[in-house]
Length: 251
Image 1 (cartoon, rainbow, N blue to C red):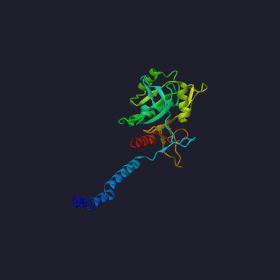
Image 2 (tube, rainbow, N blue to C red):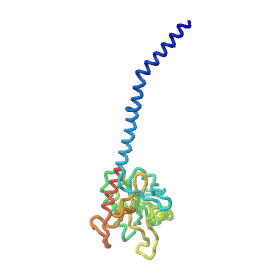
Image 3 (cartoon, rainbow, N blue to C red):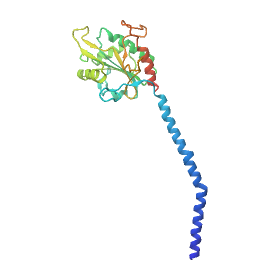
């Protein structure tokens, strides 16, 4: 009985030894030189591809904490009576403006430029515009709908937004730092910046750098490409805005 048991142990030991000789080196070789290396290479390549896809447009930092500035949360009604929030723009590149429909000066020029941009990117479902009225008491849904028709606004992601006045002014002046105010002393009764803000698919404000390496932050929206320069000799920025929209669409 003892002899048989010893033979059994010897047989088991022999099998383990053969397994070790035949398979362990292959497993070690596979781990060190094959599968794991491949997986790591694929992972590294994905990261490299993602890095290569990132454009040269910079993020705008918050001055108080240094974090990249996101679009603040908002919720307003568009020209079709639909509630639209910042979440409706997630996954889209879009331009932001503040305007009002009875504006006798810069708004028509700004929106003509935006319509030209709209037409340039008409085949892109992930491009849009957010236009916030600074005169919501007059600019109702119906007024905005008529305005959209007048300017031939056709992009389904271009929302003309109206709602609570205080919320709109807070969004302009504190959320985007795009100036807007009531002023009965000037023509039209309101004053505001003629700048556009450019937003990426993740809701971050983006821009290119100037000649000194500083973010331009906003794009001048009044002067058209055809005009070239404004009365002060400032070169139009609609053309570079188009270039930068394309960059973000490709990210």
